[in-house]
Image (tube, rainbow, N blue to C red; front, side, top):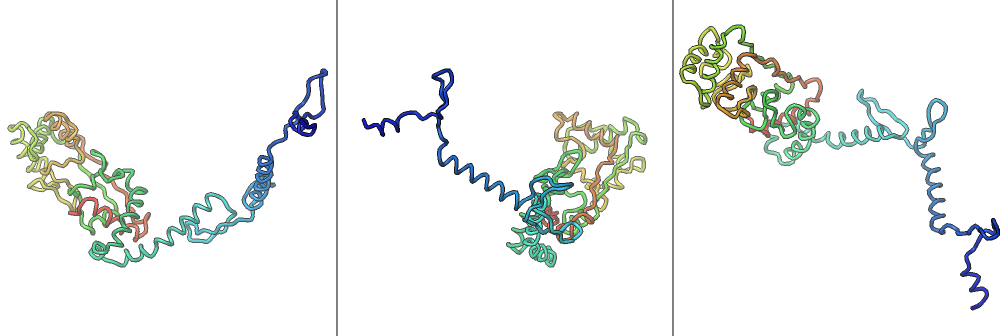
Length: 306
């Protein structure tokens, strides 16, 4: 073997030695690794120049990259690049892209919207986002609501009416439902009679004798339930008084009760304690007219709009 080949196979050292035979190997880094290190170093310097980076005085090095966006007051602002400014710019661009569609929705009647496939598709996507941001916290993501707290928007039972006009009115002005407590007006026996009568209206097994007495009480001036729920107990939409004959229960936990006695007890509890939690805030000052119209159509389509 030649001396040159033998030398190339010999492990290289730095020439340093300790204790006679302890040596330091000389193993250079791979060339690709060295070039990668240099590249990352150069990239860091370029990044520091273009984007905000090091603290400087009372602020920081702002960089050369700027972003322009429109703030909540409608003013155009230019700011050095940061993720918040980038987000606002993206939101502005998205709003600009959607504006022609919102303008078209605002100029059309509800009947025209229902016949326009392109606008209907836009409302399905934008309405879903608006509903998720503003309504889902109470009515749930699918609009199914929560028994005892928030109405189900996917069935055909509407407290204040489910037409386009009524839903729009509800969104703009909000609603404030109320039922007084009867615990101080009626005796426990009378409340039990009423509960059995109301249970019988929707086919729930009940005490017939008590229901007969509850029928009289329901239509009397003592309880005067018919004032709000109507003489036929089918409710009054102008007051938001629910239909008591359809088997749909919003405030009373009837569906969850495992027995007929439990269902009657759930009705009795509502009569006794009353309701003061049927409050929906007004969105007229929070959302634009275009957004409210989109939400009106979206909610209407969730439940058929009766």
